[in-house]
Image 1 (cartoon, rainbow, N blue to C red):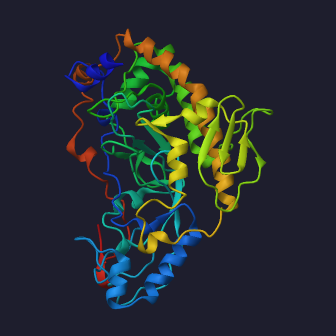
Image 2: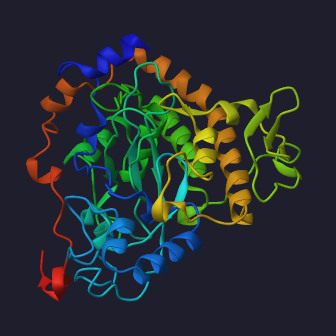
Image 3: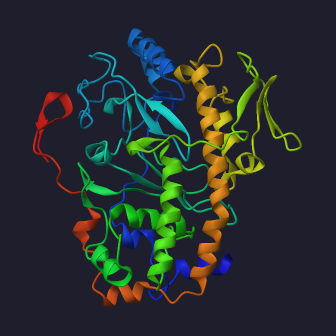
Length: 409
């Protein structure tokens, strides 16, 4: 593995980086305050109501001001959202319905979509988020951390990284309606000429999911010499993508074969204490509650060296030091969390089963004289033009700016 990282992190004759292939990227969201997101939607409404009812110094304390946001800071409405744009303390406006987001890898949360509450909401992501969009989310790099280099979601991702430096968020399309793929200009034509067949945006993304590996410079994406190997990798990547999308874009929800599907064997108590796993029986214990069968591969699945199920659990129990609005959480264990957990176990189990095929593909690519960064430069694909690294102009209408002023981008 060390040799692979070195090859991807270095010079122009190595394999390309994801940054070469998908040039436009956006930094992770920076909420500035933990209480604007939660694993359940009801807690967000309770937090909003408490903040609206507070006044003066108490509202300031609950808000948790930062240099970017205070209760008096105006902010433009997020694209596609209708909220107040003046200072929250002066006129909070109606409660905006929360949106489902991906909070770090594989964990779905809710967020209050009010720009006045978010330090850096990355409006350019909201502008292109629609029913056709997919987001590739880099997991950052942790030496010897293990786990996939990136994941893909149809939800708006916040880009949070479990450990280490967060990676970038790369939309698959630069404009709504699956328009203008976020690929280096000329790349699809070059891939079609070499491999034939499918080399469109989703095929490239599928290949990236199958073949990418982490490096200090970002995910490395070897490109093969053989069209047959390309087709194998794209087919494998499409299966990884299907599992990760969890039924989005018309796909089926991930399911394990009968007899291997996890079920609740003993009801999860209202306030389960502790998460544990019994390898001998394949049982996940949440306090006195029991879920089985849970494959060892799902329990051990890690990103950046952090066990995903541990992280999921920790975010649904009161973290040490939580205060203010972040303390407002469900009084018991919501049924939706159990459903989410069963699906997460299924997703991780299926991804773990696909991991050996991905590793075998990467082993074959190690000795493959494929397309290098130098070769892409010679073909005129690299370096990508600066315009491809900036957001596209996607607006044909006004957006409401701070204090109700309209802006046109």
